[in-house]
Amino acid sequence: MQPDLKIFPDYGHPWPLWLPGTDEYAVSPHQLGLSQALTEHIRRWHQIWLNEFDVETGAWSSSRHRAAYLDESGSILQQLRAEYPGRVELALGSLQS
Image (tube, rainbow, N blue to C red; front, side, top):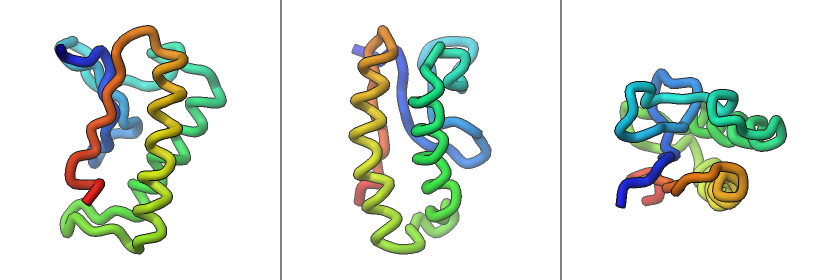
């Protein structure tokens, strides 16, 4: 079953939030009606990826930043599942290795 909301970073996009199978694939927390607290948490989490992950090499600037990003991903997922009414999936793929 396809999720209603996917979470993954993509270079050039301000938010890691995606609505599969819709015309408006890339979305913002505001469009989803997420709380200000969760929006800020997602912004800080995504900022780690933007600042510390090199998309050209596929490498993190440090294992500390990678660990911080992955640690926060579980909290983000839990909060999204509490606030968003649909099925939510975290799709980090190679970022986890």
